[in-house]
Image (cartoon, rainbow, N blue to C red; front, side, top):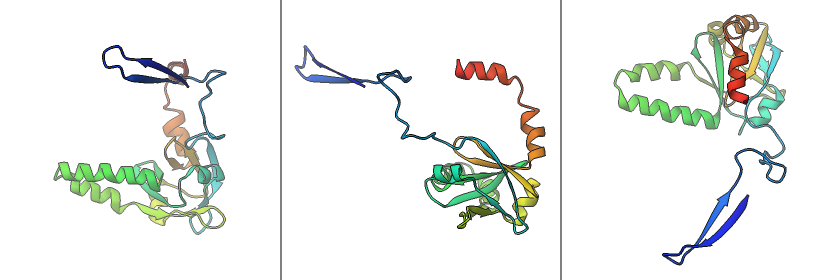
Length: 178
């Protein structure tokens, strides 16, 4: 970061401008506290007979607390939100509910399917039977990071719904990464 100080000719005030590069340079690296930010990567874990599945340690480290909200809002998978991200989602749900009378029932359906979960001492979360059935989860579960949330998928369903339908990934990657 560079600070430039100028005296403004009309007001005789000192103006300080702060310049920081948008991309890292050798003299201006972007700080990251020594770790990647966001939920990234994929992990496959076995769900036990009680419906518990291990939350990867990388995901537990990334979370801002040990409280999460698990729900199904898309038909093919479950979404795990951190407590702080869920607070943002709750605010949006309240805004929808306030703005449209029909939204009350939609908000009810979404919230009634949500459950609070916390990892146990072994780092496992309990996926309720109703959510397991709704997302087709049994045996191996794919936990996929998606920046601000974690998705729980049946691996075969993930391949059908995501990998096979991704479209032109090369074109997208070139647009994204330059």
